[in-house]
Length: 374
Image 1 (cartoon, rainbow, N blue to C red):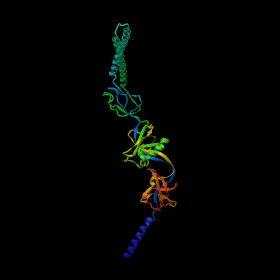
Image 2 (image 1 turned 45 degrees about the vertical axis):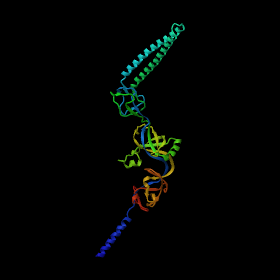
Image 3 (image 1 turned 180 degrees about the vertical axis):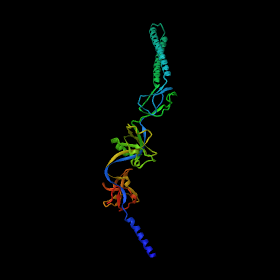
Image 4 (image 1 turned 135 degrees about the vertical axis):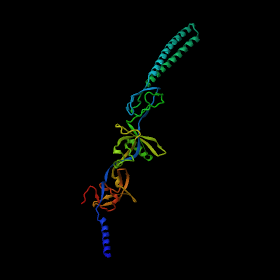
């Protein structure tokens, strides 16, 4: 009885060993190796900056009587933004005009007196000293007349400053002083206007890239694309693959290379200009930046997820004609989140495994997902 029991256990063990060996093929996802032109890109995180940012301040003091725009409104250069109560300034202008009229009369009279004394001194009816005094008085009143004219011009300017107009075209920020407040000349900030069309994106790259950037930027403007920077939380696989939310990118050109490398970071600051007609880029926004330096012709490209890393370096699983896989070492020249440029190890048209590698080893039989078995 004991012998029969041991024989049954032995047969069961043999059946258990034969089960996995006789099992089906491992399901995998695959992709074809391609040959195509691949751009040489530099990636960085950038910050959107307005090309022009102007803080509007009053040039004359007074009561802010009127605000002619709403916060966040798009304004054009020359648009009337604020009005300061003009009545004190109008009174000042009238006063300076009256003083100018008085000075003109005095200067005219003094000039006539000086001419008479100049004629009388020749006939010795008046002394030379009297004639000189008359001439000096005429010159002094002429200078006072010039000062009076300048005072009138300044009063007119001050009255003009009562109307505060937009110095640049752009979008207004928060209203910093509301109507009814008394403002001081040049002290109070009224509103900030940011120019958002066109707009800058500022970013930094390692100083080792400087020579390459300068060499290529000298011949033509280098293309730059940006998209909203990917957030760490809540990012789905489709966002991570594209490197940006929704994958939507905006195109611009490199227009500025800083004149010095930041010694604390070893980075060089660059700026790209974007037309931003749809205002998709907003000042202060962080964006994913991609600067294209050149294009590699006829590169061998495989999906980035096909490349695995082991103790002996990088490798891929290549699906052979008989449905088994071969573990093949590869040399990757560069890669991003989507693609890897293969310098050595693969040929265009070969099939590589992109998902399911954990269950594979050399010679494993595979079943491509979406295909029916033979």
